[in-house]
Amino acid sequence: MGLTVRAASLPGGTPPGQDRWGTSERAAVVLDGASSHSLEAPAADAYVDQLLAELLARIDDGDHRDVLRGAITETAAPLGLSPGRSPSSTVLMLRVGEQEIEVAALGDSTAVIGHPDGTTTRLTDDRLQDVSADLRQAYRDELRRGSGFGDEHRARLRELQRSEIPRRNRPGGYWISEAEPTAADELVIRAFPRSAVAWVVLATDGAQKHVDRLGGQWPEIADQDDEQLAAFLRAAQQWETHSDPEGTKLPRSKRHDDKTLLTWRPE
Image (tube, rainbow, N blue to C red; front, side, top):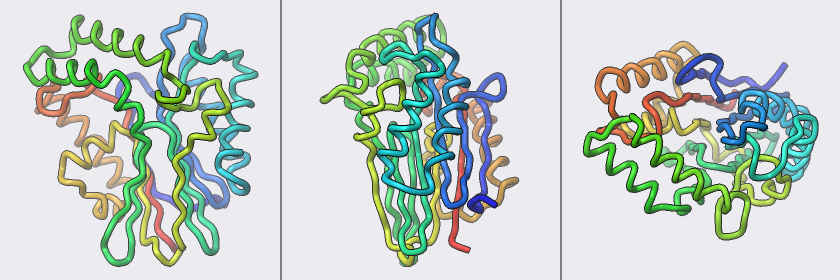
């Protein structure tokens, strides 16, 4: 029997999307995949399927960096991937020990840890936001002005993505799970005494943006069951459709992104 969690995932487009989550005996993993623009590379869904399986096979023990390094190696080889021309994925890992709770992040997905005194700790890897920050800000500003998700928006995103590739998994750039195993050395890791953790929420950015948009209701999210989490994600997607179809209120790369929430509480 795996770790007891509550979770929901909603693809932004054609199912199953490119978010993935899963549990092992005492750990949980959440992934947010992104496709490569190389025509030779496999789709991101094949990458995250393989990466999830490799992570869950080894996550219960050992250093998180070793776990991710091995998973990247065993994912890239059978898929024939090479650095810079491959799908990629953010990684969130939660491991529950008898004395300690460990959380690790690579890429811009978010973990929020609730403490018994009502405070929270937020863990994410935001180094990507510093790469080509001017281009990132420009496409968001254009959305706020009402330019929408049309051809000009897609051209801005292509320019941004072209500028990011040379700085992927490089010092001074950003780090992501792709085909370079040494990216695992850049995991952002925090450990907490088990007695200091009341709950943990893992969220891909498509869901995280909406929790923050609603005032950061992380403790409320941590209390929800599977059906309530799924309802929250559906409501977020409906808000995008009916209240912000052109991204003027919540600038984002596309109208609907994949959305995943996973919560854990001590039994």
